[in-house]
Length: 315
Image 1 (cartoon, one colour):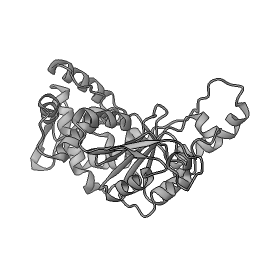
Image 2 (cartoon, one colour):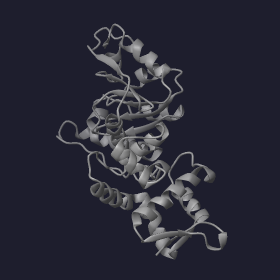
Image 3 (cartoon, helix red, strand yellow):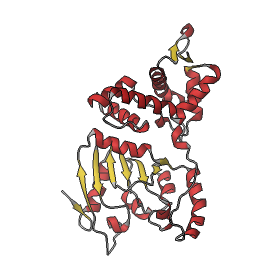
Image 4 (cartoon, one colour):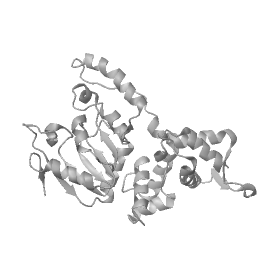
């Protein structure tokens, strides 16, 4: 069934949002006032993805002010200049798909006399390929932090002066934060588990599948590779990831690191806000150890000298 703007689109979308368990919003153009109405009293929003091309911000197609608003209510914001789809994913299982951006004209929120003709519908069950598509978009998006927001605010006035003299606009800023989030480390229990889900598309539960989709997206593994191609690409992309590379560069200093010290290093270098407590990253560290040894193929080993603590060392 199709929902139509001016008839039932905003009501059905609001109902969908209120009934969702964990929502990820993908929308290229977002206006603050409409977003506030749409998310009013919602406590189940995990993240919002916006386009935020320079021209969007110069022409006020999107509002920068959505960042402090979302931050104030504990919702993470990401920027992806390639984003053009509009979708609301509930736990990456179900999707409200629409042509409408988040604006008064597109959703008739607040009432807009000459609203756009827009439609929407609900897709009940997303398959693995669908979910991976969104996971890839998420992995390629830039996490908006106070630092990035500040750089955007500083550069926009000058870019506005150039407009419309320049054909192409491009904001320049460093965005290292996202690469050092705990979520940028592998999440699947083992490489073997990941390959089983990849090859057979069979999984024990939703948690296992979501971890696998996360890892396929982070390490840019497309579907359809042979076993050999899968392992070669996963190995290459895993060891070249900035967080893993920095961890192993630190390991090279002493050629060994005990489990507690490894957790300390990850805790100190992660960019999550708030910073997770050390006990919360125990499993992340265990998974990282297993992946390093498995994909390192003889270059690394784990032992427990003197029954003290797991030690990762270079062979």
